[in-house]
Image (cartoon, rainbow, N blue to C red):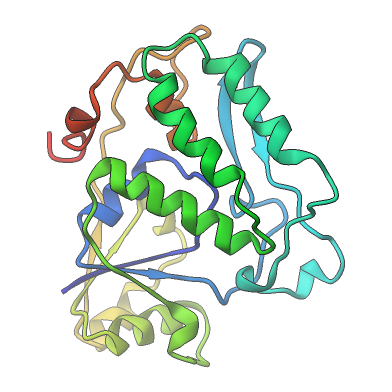
Length: 229
């Protein structure tokens, strides 16, 4: 069984969904430390003024000691309206805008107190569009106390996995020897980023998945084939 493990990030890039598609199980790494300058509550989109962060504000009190699943959204800010207005201004004239924006707006209009609730709604929304059937479980369900690479090994073993699919970004720190000792094969993701007709100038790689949804001219049934081409 092929397992991938990743934090529940906010509208992540296409490469994450490729890994999810090619796995038999996705373990949501929800009980690791929240990173304020990471991807847990923000990602990049393309606007008339260039690449811009789309950020979900979070409550800052004690956030440096919080795990991802504990982080609360700062709903004192009118961030939902700001996000939706930004998306409208940046992508409102595209052919697929109405198709995806209405469903995205419905998720934004739900009452979310915790960041992980919002992020998981968005991830499930994206997975339906891509036709991803791979099930998910949460790391916090297993109460594993080990850390670092050993923790990843223990999570894979806990679900009966024998293969771990990971992105090339982890080559600098992943200790493959730990996996070999546990008889787990490490598979490195091979992902070729598609070029699609973006708006606003030269093509930018590794933007939020929402940039692809809102600018790709593909019909929804064709979008589901993106990771199999």
